[in-house]
Image (cartoon, rainbow, N blue to C red; front, side, top):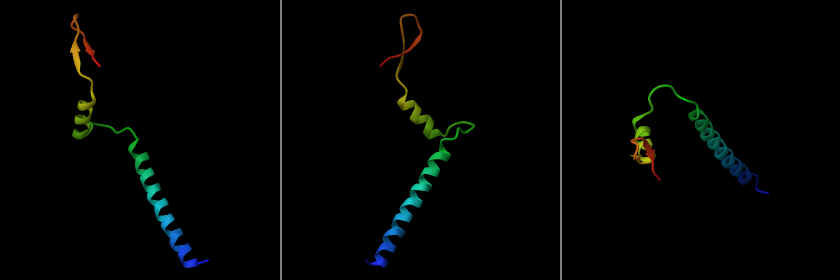
Amino acid sequence: MDVVRMLDELKREREAIEEAIVTLERLAKGQVKRRGRPPAWMNELGKKQAPERRLCRHGAARAWP
């Protein structure tokens, strides 16, 4: 067994695990509801994904597929 090679491999695995932990911590932190207005890029994203709204015969707004 080549101990040096095993140590190098374990160190690479540790670095990958540490990166995964940091990424998951960032994701968990981002899930907290924030106060205030959303950023402008988020508003633009919401406008693009919103369904088109039209008025029906009665004048009420309705989402069309």
